[in-house]
Amino acid sequence: MGLLSGFLLAYLVGDAYASYCDFGIPASNATVNVRVFNVANMTLLNETHAFSLPVLPGHESSTFPMYSFLVEHKSSQKRLMFDLGVRKDPENTPPAFASAFSSGFAQLEPYKDITVLLQDGGINLTSIDAVIWSHAHFDHVGDMSTFPNSTKLMIGPDTNLTTFPESPTATLQASDFAGHDITRVNFSNAKLTFSGLKAVDYFGDGSFYLVDTLGHLPGHLTALVRVTPKSFVVLGGDTFHHAGQARPRPPVPEELPLPRAPLRRIQAAPHREMPAYIGLPFQQRAEAFLSISNLTDSFYADPAKAIVSLDKVASFDADPDFFVITAHDVSLRSALPYFPAYLNGWQASKLKEKAVGNFIDTTNPAFVFSPV
View 1: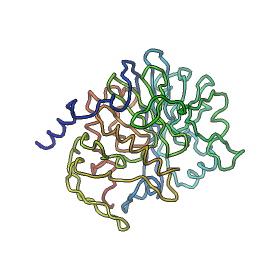
View 2: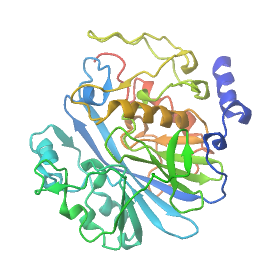
View 3: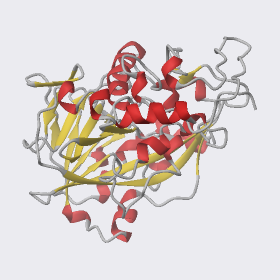
View 4: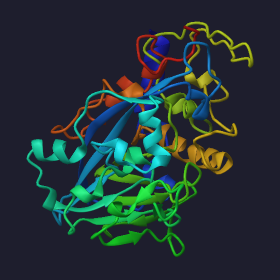
């Protein structure tokens, strides 16, 4: 208990970790409010290997939540959506994705799409100034045709805008764009760099940044959301799909608190050895538990670039001033305060300290470290 207390004390003491300023982020008192929805939960059959490695027996299929974020700029009162989750009728996506649902490969629990969730919560769709896609996969783009034409669409610089049926293999369709002003985020002249990643200041006041995180899909974006002058929520999109791909990771793994319970011995997969750690703190590990898939059917378009982006986002994750939420982190599903609650108080409520070790809790759905 004394060891645990010591590490947590180091986590909390200001001089023991890098300030947000050390990441190249300018100081600002401008903040935004951010709230999160879990739009849907989807199981992909026999596809874990396409996201993370190694895969132990019994974990070949994975269930992913789909988080969508409502961001409210305090001074201008403008509202943004960062990612939308899946549309209400995924069978009407282009065949490249619709076939996954008709075949039973992708299975969705009953859900309401984000436009219904917003309106049920008293948020008028006309109040949404812009939608930002972290990238153009079906589980992020929602159904833009359900938003009024006044809602702009922000996309990454290399997002592929080809549509079905003009392009038979396209994953987008004309209704995803019709009537909306579309803006590509331009990083070519970006003057800001955070942890080695190019960034643009969306509102021009330091409250909300879009960050270039290559690898998962061309044009992939991450957002840094300043919720207090000195703390941030990082909306990580698909920079990683499992918390074990990010934790722990040098150069600052010592900033993470110990898990709440010792990790039992990890059994090795037959095809690849997974090191066995018995109750070791994160500080004594040399690498993350899991890696990004580099197999031929990987869901990462460029695994090499994705690993670089993951390293950069993981440096935020290892610092107590940043709370990273990727779009499908199932380890957080039961821990997040959902709409209408706000994420702004995550640091004061010690949410990160409580949740950072969830993925190695044997009762958490993210636990994949022993055969079933």
